[in-house]
Length: 493
Image 1 (cartoon, rainbow, N blue to C red):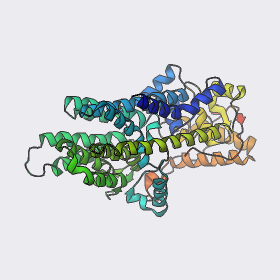
Image 2 (cartoon, rainbow, N blue to C red):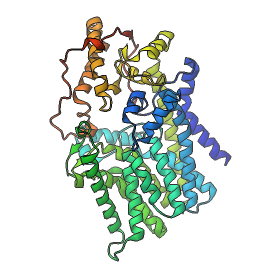
Image 3 (cartoon, helix red, strand yellow):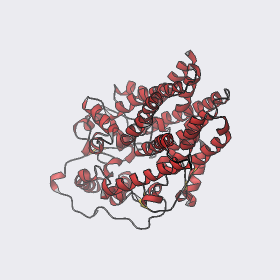
Image 4 (tube, rainbow, N blue to C red):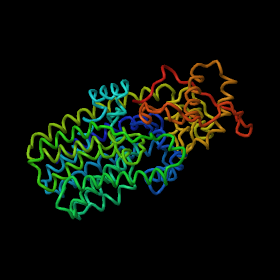
């Protein structure tokens, strides 16, 4: 028990070491990111626009801001609490399977650490991902892409995995999949869809009326249900702006995580109890089912997220169930995953420190962000974006990345036109400002349609969403406060 507590404490401290150091140097102001797009999802205006009953994590972000917490502090508290809760919920789930307390605690730690081995934090899988992108195989072969730990990406998939794992504990206690099925619609789709597949297959298996196909039947029925749900979501819940980011195709694709999980399943299936054998098979197939809903619905959006936010956990679940009779195997995987996660957290510390050091946080910057962030111009998009998280209910800074996202693009477009015109008039010779404006012009124009992990090299034509020659409206024009970063532009991994 003391060793488990020490390992958990070290894991948490490695995740929050940078914000603690930053708060000490800025007088309590925190702005950092441990995952891609955190500067968007934790920003107040975006969270408020995206929040809904089906996105409760954004409601929590809004609540945090309204309680006086900045996006950075919401990030810090989530990184502090969620990994510990995740480990404890994981241990509780394995206790429901009848495992001993010590073995359940170790497996709970494994749920938080081992998935990193199958993510792009692993240099081998990162290289594989780059090869797939460069050769165009990313359309046919789904793979992990973001080299940051999924469990530290706030608020999603971080909070959704905590929700799903808590529902799994309840499902095991009640011996029914309904808690997971009821929780899945409120989870991040890239987590909720694979979880719903496993839960629905398990529930159908228990009630399957036919003597034939007792295994394939429930699995295929659950896949059909996913396809039907995806079709309904696309036609009734997806806005026209979001549909532009969806790829229209019926072609299938492979899943690296399902391939690895199925290999593990074939290795261990004869040693699994009958009840766990089917769940392990469903978990192994879940990423494959999720990234192939387009075969039935004709539409798929960002399939890579099924792999990197769910597939890595599917492999881990199959591994833990299969290694139940091999007591030395789980500690070996935990040690490897733990070491890789610590190495990743050290890297994130350095990247955050390198980024934020390029613009000292002084009284003038603090005043500008508190008084009028929308007219605070920083000649670097990553720095502008991360400073969105410095204060509670802070508006997006003038050149922040998140302003072109569909939820807030219309809200910010008129102001951006005035900011753009004023910068070109007053600092048109500044190369960094011109590059930042060129990047944002492109983002506003296409709205992310050309992002390769969304279009998978299979979109040749993109809709222009704005007219960059639109004259700015004087009522949105105000003087800008200018800030300049030092050194080379750098973006978090």
